[in-house]
Image (cartoon, rainbow, N blue to C red; front, side, top):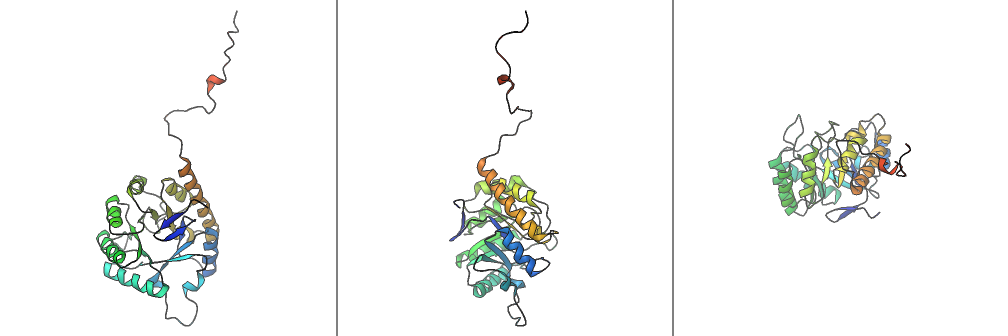
Length: 264
């Protein structure tokens, strides 16, 4: 497919990135990953027990021949902890990719902007391909781009809320001003949310709970795949202009006879 997008030195055809948490079972997670068509899967590195020799790790349930693993720093509340976690991920997985999360509020899970920018700058200078989770703030997004991030990941709504795109205006401004890919992260609850986000022109979506917490995660994963494709195509096609009044699909003037009056 010619409609690809790039993050640093990585290139993808699927514009859907999925997660690994909250699934009812590993088998369901694997099936959902396949149904989504995603080529990148994010993993919370602090939740991977690499010392457990009794059984399989979460990483054993991810087809690394088919997908790229995007480790994340979920659970970190300071730049120092996030940088340490990123370095552990690089050693464990042999990847320079990192989804940077530095949480500032435990209830809303909104990011700490100051600590996120601080960590992003340090990681970018250390050779990481940094994808930071951030609020839908155009100024913060620009600072992260200037810090050397390979993409920016503004939230659509709080993590796990399923509220959809709460502030489309901000997302459009962020995308319009960015010189790196914009990936909407967090808050997508169903297929229509995914389509709306993609119609704003963003490059990709990352979602987890919207799929994992559905009654049928595998079916929802497939729905999200089609929604992302549909939203992307609609954006590229260019929607019609909105109008206050009706505009007939078949203009009436073409239907009225011009052959003269029927009256005597």
